[in-house]
Amino acid sequence: MKMKSIVMMGMAALCLGACQNQEIEKKEEVQEWDKVFPQSDKVTHSKVTFHNRFGISLSADLYAPKQVNGKLPAIAVGGPFGAVKEQSSGLYAQTMAERGFLTIAFDPSFTGESGGEPRYVASPDINTEDFSAAVDYLSSRPDVDPQRIGIIGICGWGGMALNAAAVDTRIKATVASTMYDMTRVTANGYFDSEDSPEKRMEKRRALNAQRTADYKNGSYALAGGVADPLPDVASQFVKDYYDYYKTSRGYHERSLNSNGGWNKTSALSFLNSPILAYAGEIESAVLIIHGENAHSRYFGEDAFKKLRGDNKELLIIPGASHVDLYDNMEKIPFDRMVQFFLNNLK
Image 1: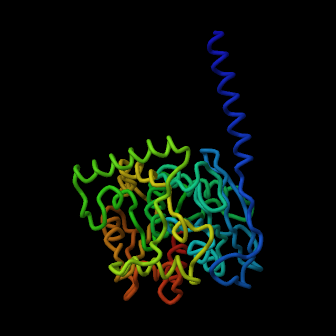
Image 2: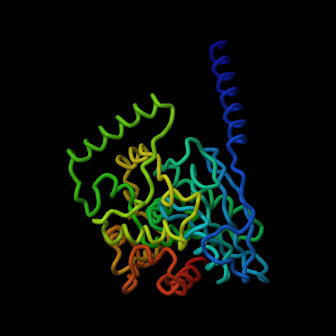
Image 3: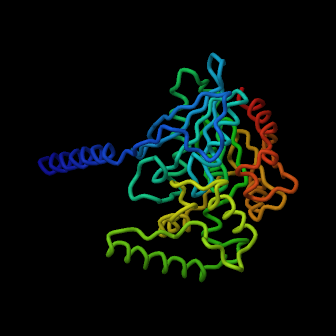
């Protein structure tokens, strides 16, 4: 009994320390407009925070349509992978708010203005949880109808969004735009060119050697953001990423892709955690959007093949590349997205 009491006291002390650290690590939020897109006069904008079930404080921009009363349908937006809410997700959120939805664009755990240590870590589990935490927050707001909540995941967060929809029955409709399955590309390489036990073992050995080095160094090595300067042999999609993340079009000082990139060893958990394993059990509505010319198109098409039910749709945008669906207002099918959510958030 004494030993049990000592253990419980120790756990309480650890919890207290963690809670104190959580307050210490809370990021100072920027209040002035610092997005890469212009501010709309059709919506109100404010900063909000909420927490996930791992105790990490998440920072988000909230957009609400002006002169609209009552309980609104709501949408949480995340992505792209390595971006922050001041980039593509914020543009999606603001535009959908102009169309009558209450929306939030959030920084995932460990990135941007959100909490979490060490910085610049990605996790299939925690980042899926970030979407559910956003649903927690939206469900608690008096101006949101908790039965009418959807999510949008862009790029790598498109796969996370599908994973969230598979586990969180409160999500009534999901849009995955220009999606990546980050677990597949990490384990198998692009176009599954490294899909072999031998190749995966090479990655495991390299990543675990990096773990040892990081521990000895007392810091975490970063993988590097988008290549700068561009190599002469860069593929078109790398050039497209550069044009977004490294120029005034989309550069942001807190964006991982614009700067130092992810913690290298983040890739370890993605090697062993296929996030679309239960996509076929999603009962709620799903719309997958991809560009006709996107290098990543196969992720969306293969994900769609896993889905079941007549409330699932695949929309291919003629002439669009992967990055076009980050910010090209002539290519992103907002009208179609609005109709999808109106049809399914009811």
